[in-house]
Image 1 (cartoon, one colour):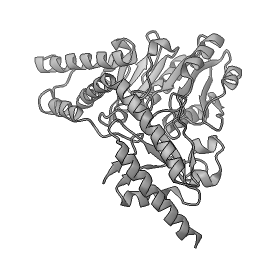
Image 2: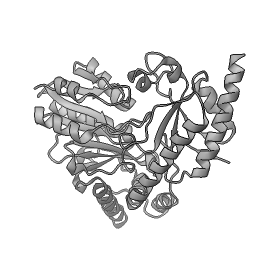
Image 3: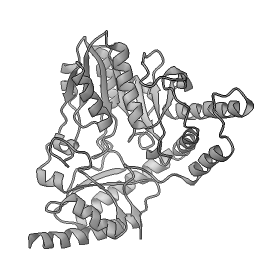
Image 4: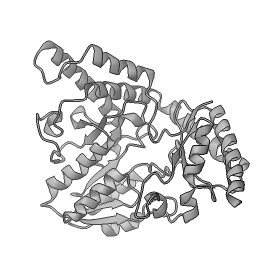
Length: 385
């Protein structure tokens, strides 16, 4: 039996997504910038897909920019906004548990002279809104906070954060890394006071190499790539047409089944946590069974057994998960997220992330827990020798 539980890393593309990509490669392969009929056909299709993505987010199609990934979307938002507004201030804010595409970008901007506030989080991975209030000042031009943490699944109160930012300094822009939230949490961009929002195709059963960035109308953003002025002059370079086709299909299907899929994920997550706790002694589960945590991410520590040992042991039984220490920090191999929530070293060292998708089944969960229990007991016995 093969059980893929690494869906926060990437997801299996839907059959319809693959078909749409093949159609692009085999039939609609023209350059959308070309003036002839075949180019115009592709351009029209990209416009149609842009409307699909915009509808899913709750914005207009002119507010959607296609990128190569969620990482590029985050970079475009952060670098583009700070460059456009640097004369208005040099203070920017983020949290200590952001994705590396955000944290490393903030680190670089700090080296270039920006003043950066890195917000602390509590033991569950939530920022302090009081610390945020204290941090915002007249020179704050950007706040960037992720919606869902990719390692532990904590959901930041984005709507509340947006209101706080705009009430203290209406000129401060708010970027949200929505890569792990899109398709897993219901929201509407227009209901949240945000100025930019990133998504990634391969997190929602679409292709790799494609993402998108929402940029609120009227927000100034300087391009980080220059060239042929594609994507309204904000992101130059010939469009990844197959990727855009695949993203459009993935977004359409994700939105059609969103309510059903979210409910399925919540039931599976709760069953997973309850069964794990009742059947496997000595483990530590960081993620929780409530609406403050994403329905698809469960972080589990196995004290006494290093995460990579457990990961490869499960791999032998066809179970694929992710190490909780996949992102490095000042202590090589340690998760900056788990360090930020002040988790004990032995729990950080033994953390695994199990992440679900709409195609994950209860029988797969049962098999994964059964094998995990066996390996945990056996490995602890061997290591104690």
